[in-house]
Amino acid sequence: MTDSSEFSVAPITDDQLVAWPRVAAIAVMVAFALPVFVAGLEIYQGLSFVDTMLALLIGSVVLTVIGAVMGSIGARTRLSSYLLVRIAFGDRGAAVVNMAFAVSLVGWFGVNIDLFSGAVVRLAADVFGAVVPAWPIEIAAGILMTTTTVFGFRAINLIASALAPILAVVTVMLIWGTFESHSLGELMAMEKTPTLTIGDGVSAVVGGIIIGAIILPDITRFIRQWHGAIYVAFWAYMVVELVVFAVAGMAGAASGKTEILDVLLHYGLGVGAFAIVIAGSWVLNSLNLYSTVLSVEATFPKLKGTLITAVLGALGVVAAFMNILDSFLAFLGFLAVIFVPVAGVIITDYLLIKRSRYTAEALTANRPIAVKAVVAWVVGALVAALINEGIVGSVLGVGVLDSAFLSALMFGALSWGDRTTNEEIA
Image (cartoon, rainbow, N blue to C red; front, side):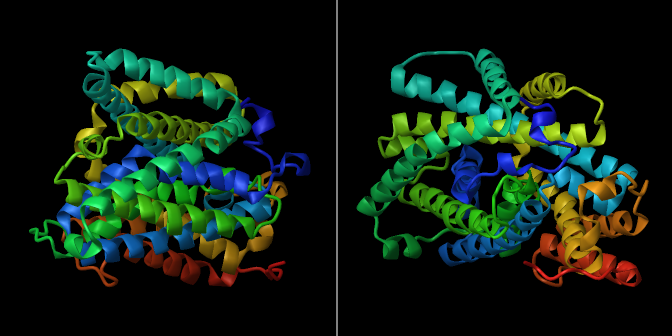
């Protein structure tokens, strides 16, 4: 359960470690989730074929690099992402960052339940001719996902390992249907009026997954060997997530549909659509809630995990009732702006400044606030926000990349005199 056995305030012990493919199953399930299909379809609709693929490739590379480094740090230290944030930002600074993570993850919980309920209502009507209201589905989904989270990492891992092959088959069927009706050349030749820039596309790709990449230590800390985290990030972001984004977009173009459920139903994947909706949402939201609980427990260690899980699950259902989905891409952009600089600070701190402090023992005498880290994070986020609003231009062409590099460079410059002797990577 999500109590001390989940090691929210302590490193993972050796008896809890597993092989990297088991952890990869969870990360891959996130890539198969409905929001990825939705975002892939919307990005493809707003860009030309070549620009879409370029945006997807750049975004996937960014996620893979961030996920690989963050995941490796988690696997080496055996600490959750929220304990890493405490070391980098200090106890009080981390409280602000971790609560921001918690709020966003609860928002994601609501987005996914909103997507889930809307999809189930639509599919029930189209596939079975049944008319059902959305709110009971949202409540039932919230209870199911919250209950799974109560049993922690191993329950989520078991469900993901069982369901990932099913979603892989559905995705292959979607690919088959797409290329059975249209060749690659025909898809590339389709004319459309771009409504997004490549930077917008990259921001949407990164924004949709970035929290998962930054909090990858929450699951990679269970991996036996640290380099297994690199394999997890590669398969999740550079392979499966990239394929799902691309397939969703091309399937939409080939079918002429603009909604992902219409696309799936067009290719006769009514049952497959249910599989994506139920399986993907179940694992993704359980993982979102699991990480939210870890963030709250890391900030308020005296609170009980089971109670936190129940309360946060209820808040997630309330978020679903608020229809956050109405501003989906804007929400993804907001997430990217806020959280990419966090990764820039932690990665720089661990690799270049004070790797030797990244231990559980350091938390017992941790600083109240790491001012340099907080300043670098805030400046990076503000710059990304200004770029997104068009107030200032982007140096790298993508606001989130500017913010990541800026926060990393600023933190490195401010903290260079504080660096300790870092041991070689084993």
